[in-house]
Image (cartoon, rainbow, N blue to C red; front, top):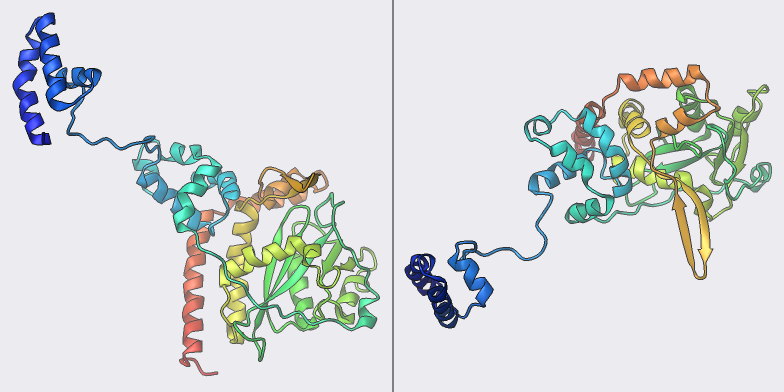
Length: 392
């Protein structure tokens, strides 16, 4: 029997069923079950109007987060650089305080729904939007052995208890598909204790360029730098940088160490920042116009650095435990570098007040909006340079 005939038959007997006695109801019900092939309890619900047999109900659990919640979750995720779900969950509550999107006011309960999404659920909701990452070329050149021998090797950095006690530095080459010719580089310096990270763009990576960038970075750090560790690249292992760290500050010299050659995990804190703080910003394109370096530094110092250091949470590994053939990793709760510095007992109140005053004038959404504008300007200049519209 078709659905249409069933509906007509149901309309014909429903009123008679409701107005009949108990005995007659049983007979009508038996006939209805036999004609339509329904189970008895299901047929009773249909005759009483509790169920519409023509209404198709979706199977499984009802969707808790509708398309609007997913849209705003993906909007916030993209706005803050597509972080992992752990960082996204840790920073979402603070970001929502600054979010001035009209829907946050007009849609009741939207902020609460976004705050209630669990970390695994964020992964599931954002899975369709994720893409795989690219890989770049390495441009590290080995230093002279005579100079390398003057700088001790430090393999691991476990006993770091204060901001500035040990920072790791590395460079990223914006060379595109080839290391030939001249191109821009980015210097990344990361504090191990707080994960506070500073970036500067360089034209080439001579020792003079690195020293100028390091001076600017130290002038903007909210703590004193007392230790610096790098790989064995010639841009770091040279007499000029050694003299800058040692001889020019006799009262408080910076202790310089280096990682083992070909052991990137010795530099793990800065190596991961090379991707999150450089590649996610400027990608893997070749930048061979020196006029773009000042714009890159403006983006790094005024927009990208404050956004990452004050508003982007990060995780730090506490310990690794071997259980048979498996290694269990335990992480501390995700916090921003700013929060780690504010919780540090070694930072003075003057330093903490300076950090508070700086954060009070920042808004992550305004920073992100201006960042997108500057990146569009950068991409347009880069496009014009690569298509020959700007004189070489």
